[in-house]
Image 1 (tube, helix red, strand yellow):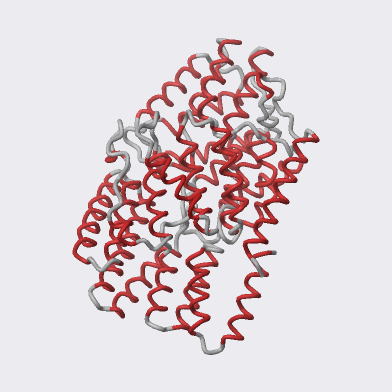
Image 2: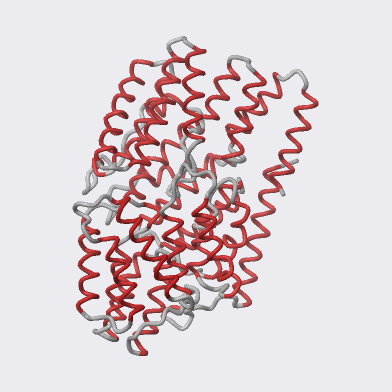
Length: 525
């Protein structure tokens, strides 16, 4: 079966559906706003003037698509219509929470969020419901200078649960509670308890309010896991149409497409997202580019990937830098080198731009990508000494990550260190020791989940284990490693190519070919 042709067919079918839905006006949403923007339909009642209510609904539609460039201005428009609208300040506090899938939040946003909560309280919200919304937000920001993120976000989640129970007819309360659940998960929980609970809340609303942007958006996040991704296809295909004017709405379907290995669909999503962002705010553009480069490389479109890499290298400044921007700037060139097996190129990767206004030190968990790529590149080029220098750098970055109390990213750095050390052991001639080390790194990686900020690891440890085993002609074990890698990261090019190389060494080639056809058919379905 020609997997690439099948994937292209899916892309054409999906794009045709999008065009058809737009033509029939499935989601006019806020089409009467300037420019005829399509943001979806949101009805969030507040005790403010009629003019403010209209602006508030639009502001929340922008919020539900994480359209940070416009949402603060939208809440300012609410206050312009009604200066006593306390919930407008609650909305500004919610904006200061930023993308919850990038938590933990650090920096001045915490103090600014608390200040917005205080302004909302000072205006004395007119209803118990509104007071409860403000109080819930306060749980997230209060005592941020002494309470760690984990305790504050747990308190916020609990407050949103109580709010949703207290006002069973408040659909927005249930939606925001589901968001809190999905954003505050244990990446080691393979039962996906919170994600499935959030989906259970959102699915009925998805049927009753098909044009609500937040429902489709948060369902995608709830299902953004290998075992659940197929459940998110309907939300992925609908969200881009419902909120066609929001760059993030164009990007989010690619989370599901990436999980399923639908590369052309992911490419279409991220091209649309970058175009919708317009290039002025580079943060959503860079995030889309990271997913785009990943999809290009998995589908063998190296020239297209190179074009994005060159555009990334041309960037010298990013306004309002955040972790997502720093992550993409480090990840994009690293992916380009590692996916192509250009080890010498990876070993010399610069950290670009050389300086940000915030300094790379603000995001050691992003810089770690560069150190990992350089370490692997050096080791696989045979330069164990240089690789150890990069591993030492990676360990220092891991310490900085720990100091910043970024426990998830500290765990990811630990996996990177273990995988890089395995390649150093390999370069030094201890092949069996290297396999043992890489197997341990793969076990650690399999026990956790990727962050929503990334389409996938720079180089999955299970895949690298397969490559080691293949070089040692341990064919059966290599096959198991590549198959296991594709269960988590389907249709990855290096895993697919590794499986093909296994077929060349495998004694029972007919049996292996049958399994490969069966696997391809399963992926196509």
